Image 1: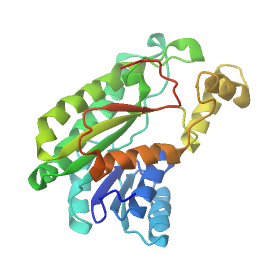
Image 2: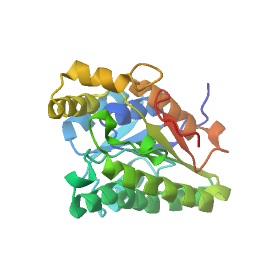
Image 3: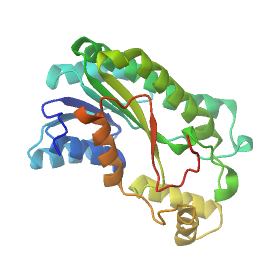
Length: 267
């Protein structure tokens, strides 16, 4: 399938590992020039090298994505080296688990900062070019908690994600309505239990906290998923690429789940 995005430029935040890396690789395979942004230089270099080895074009930028001032610098370098982004992927680390009793207001503020404020800053730096040219695609790698909160029945609480993901989804839907007539779509993917290195690290930590083995905790997670398995990064990337495609031009302001049917919300 021709996605209609060959020659475009994509900014992939959190693009050096896991889901973000897979999205960066697949965008490059579709003929998109990719700016890979993350913290660790080694992982960035590895992803950029993999794209180059496959005949793609990419640059890497090491940055602290929790620093609001970094977004302007990232955009300026992207423009100078590959061109202004036509596509932007927001994929920052999720807030840590915990019940309301486990967190304080500083942790709530930090979660809101990373999930909402940094996302808003990215929108501000990428939208002007998209508006000027009359085309753009923005996708957030978010969470199903934007549609249905996670209770503590899975051996952990998730108050930070529950209370911030819905705010980011509401912001995305609001801004999507403001720019839709300019050919720009803004969507969120509600991520489920995806088999990545960071997910395995998270599973191992939660299993230890619950006094369970890794395999037992993972089995407990999977039993709540109708698909009866963890998802793969390639499945997340496939959905993301469709939302970035020319064909997805009439889909905007949506939170679309990729979770094996785990979320029970109808809407």
